[in-house]
Image (tube, rainbow, N blue to C red; front, side, top):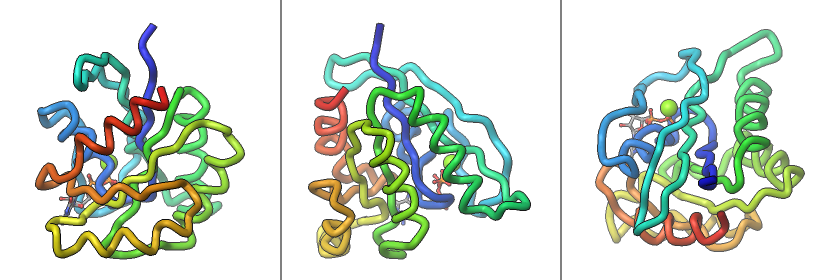
Length: 162
Ligand code: GDP
Ligand code: MG
């Protein structure tokens, strides 16, 4: 049996872009605007000789309980089914209260978490990762899912925890 790696995080941080980058094809749907309901989607992936299942938690709803709880419950199911998690945050936006809520849920799950700070599009922007140390998840990996920066280092760390 292969390990399952779930990609979680609030809408628009670049989860699907990251999934596509890892798969090397456009399988996950990238959206410019949040609010689309979509199921969790699992893909067969491979990295550096390791086969694994990659789960894009693309679905969310702005339901009556509010978008934050919907994101959290969506992520929660994916996390329960996963062996390890990549939490994606947006380096250009910075740390948000929703990110912190998701971290609480991840901590409760006991699953290993690797932190990806996305939209760190060039070397000069690497400083954006610094504030995310305070999430308490260890090293924040600066990546650009869009441009393919830092993906190898992130995956080496995440797959190590599978
Ligand atoms: P998701 O909602 O977390 O799955 O996010 P998406 O993958 O759909 O991406 C949301 C938006 O962020 C899209 O407009 C992407 O093109 C953009 N985006 C994703 N990754 C990056 C990145 O590394 N850098 C920049 N600048 N934009 C990105
Ligand atoms: Mg998505």
